[in-house]
Length: 438
Image (cartoon, rainbow, N blue to C red; front, side, top):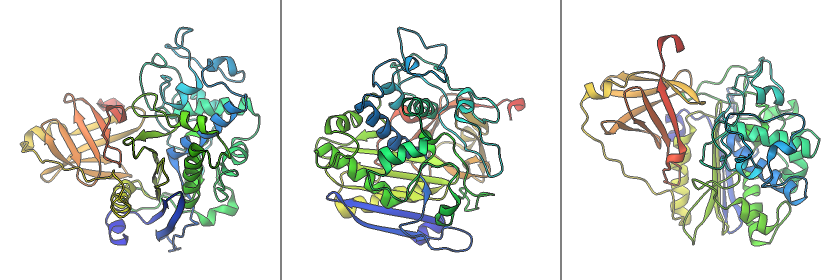
């Protein structure tokens, strides 16, 4: 494990494995900071977008309490902030179910967080895209219910909705409704992290193994990206979902509501969770990527699962390899290696894709020629070597990422799930930047 972590510039990794409804083992690898503090099962990581799964459980808990409605128009429940957008009409209302399943047509795929020393906006400022927010306003761009489009912005609307339904700090709400009942005693949605817990943190690094200046970013977008957790705590949440589904442990949700959560709406995404697997091995899962962190969990409905947390932007490679090893050891049907065929594409054909690009709502990146191969580079974060599968389709050598060029200036980044599935819905469009946009 440690040699591969060093090769992929991942200083810290924590893993917990679930077998027959219990944590079978948990372990930390590497070091949590530049001082060399060893990683343990108690080391804290930002869960990133895994936060959405936990926040969705809290929302569904309030639904069962009668404080929220799953299918009522959300604007009628919002009094302190108003959702707008060109596609928001009485004929196409935004509902909580749509927000939790990324089918509400809302904007803002993800968030960058706020580096140490930067001004941190309030939630209304985030929603409105007002200074000091570094993200665009959250609006309804496409007709709700018509398509899946991943939206961290939608989960910020959920955060606002929860705060109005039960007025208290979001971190306190999640502690009382989900974290506490699930036994996640080390976890918190507090942003920034309280000083007393900071010594337990795996400090974030970019994809080159360099620690981020000032440490972890702050995410006021707590429902979308704000959870701090350990691998063991997140495993306890998975076990709670498994037990709730079976009617054994319904500390937060009833069995019927848990089934609702795990039922896909579109593109195999349920309410806060990705779903998949065959009838005998259905699973729920989610990945996450914050500044300096890469994370993943999977839970099989019948009691198996795993959590892997890393403190690196290039952690996805190690996550995938570790999950394949766990799957082999425990006989899981997923995470099989996917064979890839290298195409003979002349270098001049590949070179025409060099340039500066912007992935919609995600990140700016460069495609450059290094020797005889293309590289996708996110400045100061990570780099992938791209190998041709076809004249306009490339795969990353050390990742499940694929890049498809639909023209010289436009294309889609495809994110293959660690289980091996590849869905068009997980694609992020990108376009070439003009000189004045760079």
